[in-house]
Image (cartoon, rainbow, N blue to C red; front, side):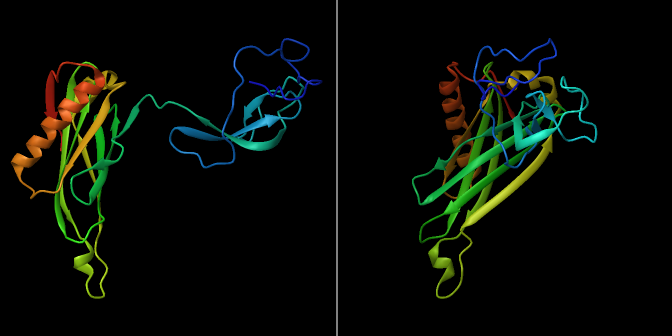
Length: 230
C-alpha cells in the first residue's frame, strides 16, 4: 500500500519507477489506541511512499535504499484474530425501567468469558434474569444465564446512592467450543431480559425466546443442539 495523494510523486517502486495504483482507495484510522484486533505503529515512508511497520528497531528495506523513514500519522490497522471470536447482543430492553447487554468472547482453546450489564433507571429495586444464546448458522447453540439485582431511586432515599448497575464477568472452559470453533463464524448472540423474580422457570423461558430470535435472525428452522455453558 502506498500514498497516492500527490499527482506528481508516486514514491519509489521495487519494480522500478513510481508506484501504479489500482483498485480501491483505502482509508485507515490513525492516532487512536490499538487493541487485540488493531495494531498500531504503522507509518508512511517519506522515501518510497509505502506503509511500513515502525514497531521494531530495524526499519525494513526501502526501495529508496536503506531503511524506511517515517513521517506523518501513526496508523492503526484493524485485523481479524483467527483464534478469538467476540459477540455482542446490543442493548437488551424489558417491560420495566430495566435495560442491559451481553458480551461474549470465545477462544479456539475452548475458554470463554461471558459479561453482562444491567441498569435500573426507575424508582423501585428490581431482581432480574438475563439469558443469552449464541447460535451458529448450522443451528448449534450455547446458552448463558445471569441472575442478579439492581437498585432504583428508592434505595437511595433520603441521602444515599442506589446501586443502579450490575456488571458481572463469568469465565469458563468447554471442549465443545474447540470442536465447533470454525462453525461459530457468522454466529449471533441474542439476549433477553426480564424483571421478574429470579426463578429457574423464568430463565428457561428467556432462553427459549432467545433461541427463537436467533433462529429467525439466522434464517434457520431451529437450534439443532443446545449446550448450557453458564
